[in-house]
Image (cartoon, rainbow, N blue to C red; front, side):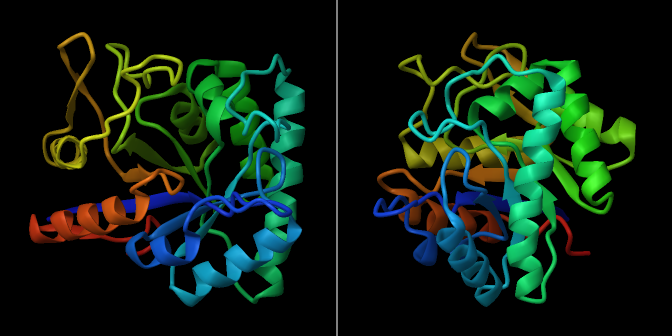
Length: 254
């Protein structure tokens, strides 16, 4: 039987600014990646999102990003592996405290935005991130782009990893995501996005923008929670997967 985890980036509001529909979308996902205050989020939002995730029996993960609130962590920064390590340890520590305060534990770590994409291609950065996660808690699962340097680094150091695919993003021939700067980066047709996900899970393939099938492993599927139709899409994809004989479970569930 096929199975997959559905994860969503949450807790991205901060101060007076509200982003996403966290409370509404949580019933349809199995893992929550909670912003840790650098690219988005703040202490109050982190606490509230942790409590909402626990209320909905959704596994909690840290979503560490680059220190770029104005750019939402989607702009590349020239950071060293040591800086990457420090950023991850700091942000994991912050979220872990809120999770522990509620008597729970974290399941996973997924870097955010540009940090994620940089690590997908850089061995030094991915090694630093994997080391930070391992030293904080070797029981944490490291989420990374399917087939990327990040999942390879996680496996090498001894972490459980989750190969991640994206429902609403297009792919390049090398397995990387199409840059958001390109007009064809996002899939806006929900039916097309659902079909892409099902094919990645059942066939282990995705059609690149160059018209060639590339192999992917789909342990977890990312659903973006800040899109116009995020809630509608989350509901639709979960229903479609279940009707298609694909079990939807968090990575840590046996």
